[in-house]
Each structure stands twice: as C-alpha cells, then as structure tokens.
Image (cartoon, rainbow, N blue to C red; front, side, top):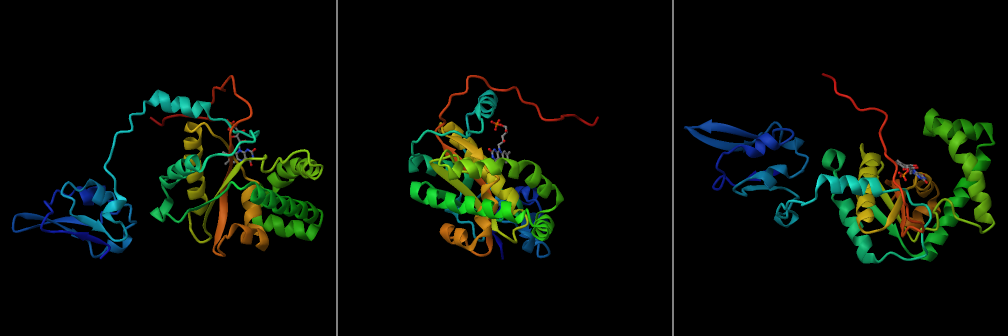
Length: 296
Ligand SMILES: Cc1cc2nc3c(=O)[nH]c(=O)nc-3n(C[C@H](O)[C@H](O)[C@H](O)COP(=O)(O)O)c2cc1C
C-alpha cells in the first residue's frame, strides 16, 4: 500500500482525505466510529505530495517513499509582502558579470531554493548541473559556439531548414530566423575575435536544469525550479539571467552531452547564467503584464 495509516493512532478527523488532491483517504463510519481508510480504487493515484502526512494531527500517516526525516516543522516565513515585492522589483537580468567566483556555500543555498520548487505530477525528476570551473566553462563555450556555427550553415540549406522547422515548430523556427540568428551572427563574430562571449556572458557559474525526456511537465518543472534559484540568488546578492540559447546546445551534440554527463533519457530545458553584477542599477522599471481583470 502506498499510504499506510496507523489505525491505533488515527482519530478519524478526515483532514488527510480532504486535503488529498485525489481524495485517496476516505472516512467511513462503522459501529458509530469514524475510520479513515485508503480507497482501494484510488490508492494508485497517489502523487506522493505528502500533504496527508503533513496535516495529520496524530502523525499516523506514512507515505511510501517519504521518510519522516523528509518533513521539517512548519515555520512562518516572517517575510512581509512589501519585502517580497521589493525583491521582485530589484531583480534584473544580469548579462555583465564581475570576474569573481561565487562561493559554493552560496551556490548550495541557491540550489536549496531550487529543490523547494513545485513539480508537475509531483515527479521531482528535475536535475541540476552547476559549472563553476572556468576551464570547463571555456570548453563548454566552445561546444555551444560550434553548435550555433553549424546551425547557421544548416539554415542556408533548404532541406535542413525544412527538417529544423518540422522539429521545433513554426513559431520557434520564425523566432530562430528573425531574432536568434541575426544576433548570433555577431555573437560568433565577437567570440572568434576574442572580444566577448555573448552566449555565456563570461559568467562565473552556469546552472542547468534537466529532466527526463518523457516527463510530461519536464520543461515547466525546470523553469519553475530555475526561477526559485533566481530569487534566492537575488537575496544572496548574485545576479542571474535566464538563457534560452544554452539548453538546445546542451542536448544536441553527443560530445556536449558527454561533457555534461547527461544521461541519454534526459534533456536540459532551462539554464541560468549567474555571477556578481558588474553594474549597479539606479532605477527599476514599473512593470505591468499585458492584462489583469476579473470576470464578475
Ligand atoms: C523564459 C525566459 C527566457 C529568457 N531567455 C533569455 C536569453 O536567452 N538571453 C537573455 O539575455 N535574456 C533572456 N531572458 C531575459 C529577458 O530578456 C528579460 O527578463 C527581459 O528583457 C526583462 O528584463 P529584466 O529581467 O532585467 O527585468 C529570458 C527571460 C525569460 C523569462
């Protein structure tokens, strides 16, 4: 059984069944006594989110695969909403970094935030790779530029263009042609001249988020996790920037996959460059999304 209830301790309060997204626990009344049972019809639907065990007042629930050490006592965050808004407002995408390494203690703290991200289907299958070794970052850069140089050549070939469009879909293909590659032409040029590295931005650390290919929410999980990391980095005084150019380059060439030790069944779906910002922002933009409304 995936969820076990210690019937000697259970008071029949029913909190577990109510909070469960799939009502796997059911309260039944037998001889005027309330008993909570695991529904035989739905037990296999358990997502192992652990909400049932986390709310149980008598700590009588065990979810297979979740040890009691996996739970820590709930503590109020003490963060005021204005403080959180201020943190969000201060975050900018940092593309120019100081030549200063980030301590692994800080990276660890950033990874801790990423670990706490929610995951679709509660699969928790996201993995994180950090590259903070300058030599490896430099080798990795070579790989990434080689891939984009090859892509530039391929896009000149109508047959290759057809297959690339079919593989990535029309919208991404148009963005590749109209937005990515016109800039890439210059990135490659500057990189070859030794002028700048506009893909990795000479970041002292790169964080890659990967997921199994067959994970239905893999890409979304990676993005959410990356955003957790970004906000922790902000608190730690470290600037970050999402980077959409890096994930496809991680997945394509076997030698890059080997460098990253990326298992065959996984792909990188999100990446963030990180480091201490070279510049200080004096002003923050007042941002609004396109729309916000109620339907009354
Ligand atoms: C999903 C996503 C992907 C992004 N990809 C890139 C990227 O590949 N390269 C880059 O320089 N910035 C990238 N950005 C950063 C955006 O360009 C940036 O958030 C936007 O310009 C607003 O600036 P701000 O983050 O400083 O507020 C990305 C942002 C998001 C949310």
